[in-house]
Length: 405
Image 1 (cartoon, rainbow, N blue to C red):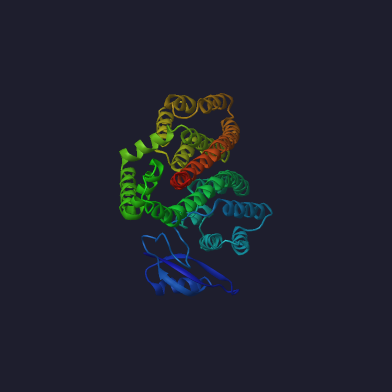
Image 2: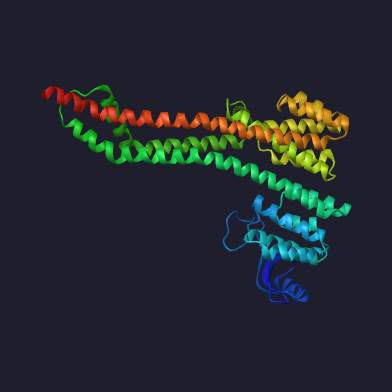
């Protein structure tokens, strides 16, 4: 059976889209007409979904967190008001401003109408919905508390989107300064400095050392820029291929985790994400082992992922989560301490959510401290480079004027 993507109109003239299995285009077309859908576009889905496509749903991309949180909140509110699931999905799809959200929930609604459950319909949308979203929806359906599960999902997604937005906003100013500074330096060395150095060499005088260094650097960049660009490209390609290996990825992740400032920041971000995800999943009724498995897939650093794998194995053997986290010696000690307190009191999820709040606040403080240090360093670096260029250009002119005097 092949998978077919379709777009068409329903009995009310509304646009719908989704996917359907069938042995041929004719079979799928007949199935759609039997459901009251008149296809205007029907094609077989590729087995390897392209990463970039225009005008169609990108199944290899996950939905934006903020938009998914808003849609989940709306879906939970409508379900809590007593509306049927298919009607709430139609409402969410029609009222969203994001094409990905509209098409995703329209596809979910089509599968629900065909008799599928919500979590099965979400899973059939490729990788658009994260794994924790599918599991929490399944637990909500099986326990009859789907609206509450969706409310928790909305809270969780809003928290992640808010933290991500804060980090991006904090890094926007340094990124802009780097871009503007690089543009100024490129302009100086590409247009201004060559003309000045050409004039200085025509003086036929002994030039000071800063001027000679500037002339040599300008000649190097003007003659061999392509070789430098090629070396940089080969270096980046070599690093990418090295990181693609298991040993290379582990070594790079360990170096990043041990970096003076970035390592601490990454550990705080991952700890907050780990605690909030585990706490939210436990609060929704998902078993701890399953919650660890889901959270493990959200962590990109291999060192931290191995620590979670070790904790999972110890739990399977009858150990405690707090003891395994303490023995890993990777996560901060506070995580193991509060986890132990939560396990003893039976309030593990509340402890983890409070810990997530703490580390999210520490992440903001760390970023603020790094920016307070980074901004003057960038200004000093730019000032030193521009000052060197100005000094190298003015010294021979000053010496020449002294000789004429």
